[in-house]
Length: 498
Ligand code: NAD
Image (tube, rainbow, N blue to C red):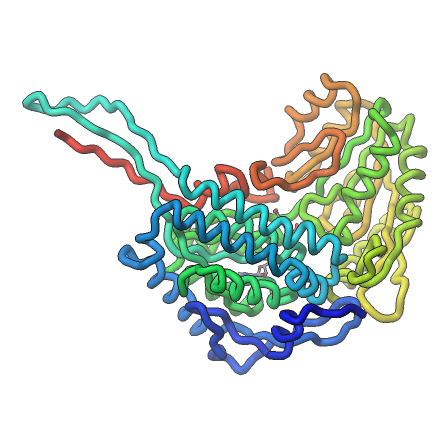
């Protein structure tokens, strides 16, 4: 299908993988393994160890030792820490094709997206946070405590690294989402135990190998592979962890949030979305709006947390915009991820494909009109046609629940108030897009939409300097930007009486 790079061929020749702890592979304490399957061919690529609580304990201990006050990592100047993160970013770029091929093999996504979003995105994020290592600051504060004998106060705050970070990530952007956590945590001076998704663990292991080659001291970044209920649960409940940072479904986020509270551990939760795209009848350019709506839902097979999965279109232009979006969907080339001319690859797994298909059945059962797609085009591989529904009832399951696949549902609206009411009528609040040329209307929507990210006249894109996170059940906390690095610090207040 494709010529794998030499590095990847060598990497995959191991066939079965243990965890990456303290700068080296360990065989793991458990006999149990998880197969990693290529979603395009349904063939097993390799297997990884299913991490036990002993494996997790070993990884957390290693991260704790690396975080020790006298460790080389803690003694490093911010500038040197920054240089290491830059070196890691360079390593990621150097092995861009290897990493992208691996992500495509285990996730199924298009290689062009793996190159740009996953690998390019990870390198960009590490460079961005490399710059932050030297800019973490506290404040000096005038306080009102009277001191006897002419003494004075010198009060200030310092930001300290929070400690060992447990980073739990999903499969949809395995490297870029891992980097949104690992890069700021390391920039702040923390150490990390990363648990990748059981669907996409291999790229995380290679990522840790490359970090070590870039010079990261042993124990600073550890990877434990495994599932959620055993490995993930052992990690989030480990007493040695000071902060849990999680990206994944709202269902899992609630479990992790409760566990973190039991341990009084810091937690940030980046959860699911059901993001509205709102197209007004005065949209700047209807072609661009239709293309933007299609890109907003079909990119990465719709497996994007900020995907614009419900589109609200003003009545006057409803048919026109929807016809244009349907034409775009029908022309999309469905093929394996290594096909450079493909527009849509397979979904990540059989189980996930079945879940998405059950939403399509629910849409039909509840009376939504299927305008396009809905079928699995091939006998082999977890492929699904880009699917478009039209619905009039905002309460239908496919309008309310996150499907996380290439399924768009369109609902008409009458005016701005109607659009706002429908868009905000959701338990989720991750992102939204608005398409209009009227700046007053756009700002009214920006101010009143209950969403953590709003884009006007463009699908949502991530940027290392733009915080990402959700309102309502879409999460707690923000990732990326300055907020993203301060999330891995804790504040100490000091007063020196002199
Ligand atoms: P998931 O919740 O099933 O799994 C995510 C991770 O959590 C995996 O590594 C899994 O092994 C682990 N996990 C599962 N149960 C656990 C438990 N009890 N304790 C600890 N860890 C556990 O999500 P998924 O299917 O991998 O990813 C898709 C979801 O992620 C979607 O809902 C999507 O919207 C969301 N997501 C959100 C963002 C964001 O920035 N808000 C970004 C990407 C994806």
